[in-house]
Image 1: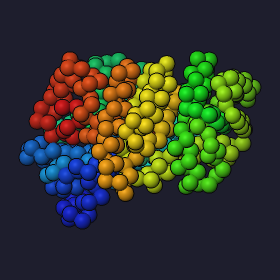
Image 2 (image 1 turned 90 degrees about the horizontal axis):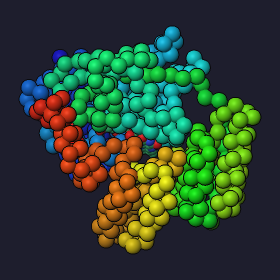
Image 3 (image 1 turned 180 degrees about the vertical axis):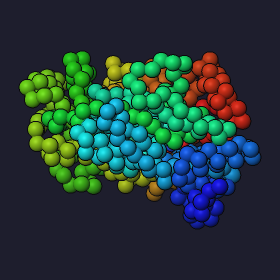
Image 4 (image 1 turned 30 degrees about the horizontal axis):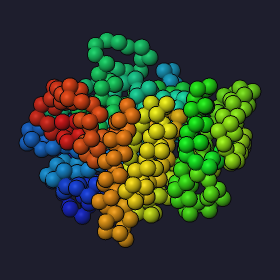
Length: 444
Ligand SMILES: Cc1cc2nc3c(=O)[nH]c(=O)nc-3n(C[C@H](O)[C@H](O)[C@H](O)COP(=O)(O)OP(=O)(O)OC[C@H]3O[C@@H](n4cnc5c(N)ncnc54)[C@H](O)[C@@H]3O)c2cc1C
């Protein structure tokens, strides 16, 4: 039932479908890759897999950072990259999107009508809406505008037996039945395959004003973050530590202050006078907490250059070695304990760890660097990776704020959720996927 190019079994061509950006060393070799072109293709592939008890690993653009799209031996990788339909409905201000559409393409299509799709992972130019829905992706503006699920009104989902269901719709209010639409958002391909999203659009964002501040230490920067969040909600509040700043400067030569212990990038998108007021609050919070330099600008290009610097932290740090990517988050009052705790773990284990954070959400990305020239580095990095996740849990936090559990963080999930909640996860999984064929090894 699949057209000629939809089924790939050549091992060479399958290679690029085996891993996501986490480069899981344990990724398996699929039986085949299905490059679905339509919901009917997805349904046929899943129904076939159900009949033959073959595991299905759904895949978007493969930018995931937790090994959620890592292939398993003998599985069917179900790639949604060819499903690229996109329409904007102006009357309901919604976008009807197939999963292979990139986040940036949806943003551009919305912008043509003066509208905006806010969720903005740093990877927005390369990740797909299907992947965003399946991981409940966050991003930089989420501190004010919320994460992917806040924009989901409806989904089309292919269930584990191949049936297709429509959940929700272009309705702003709908409480009929259990809230199943939201159950699938963030379920990492373990409960069903998302083949369409109906997403809410909002009026275009106003041009933001940007403030960049440098600090002697990350502890000073975190105190400034808490002083800001106690007073207001900026439209961006991002933190980079010294290692991140220097890695980005190595790559871009844009003139970042290499001697800074930390840097905050903050934006306000309020209308003019209100933005000025917010900027004044932010500036005071920074200077009161030891900022060594503060730069405020209304120039969108200048502001965007700093945001771009923040977005390029992962590729910049990646130049120094393979990364074990953390995504730990804590309630905001514990952010300082998390960040200084990570620094202590890096020192104890003799490991290089760069910290970049959606600081206003309490969501940090400690990037543990495995030095390819040092054979002992991998083991020490794994110890650091483990201790950072335990630290987050001990602070009342989470092992993953936005990237998902995937296969790489599964060993730490029980410590966060506890036996009862793990069992609840398993019961939901069994109810929707009794044979366990959909992306196993994440919640089961
Ligand atoms: C440089 C960089 C920066 C990043 N910054 C951010 C950030 O700021 N915020 C953030 O949240 N993430 C970020 N990410 C991680 C990643 O881009 C997101 O998790 C993104 O949502 C993944 O989308 P994808 O299309 O690449 O999905 P994939 O990696 O292909 O898949 C991700 C997961 O979703 C499942 N899946 C994919 N499509 C479907 C579908 N249609 N139905 C069911 N399951 C599906 C897969 O099985 C897998 O479990 C970043 C990644 C990189 C490389």
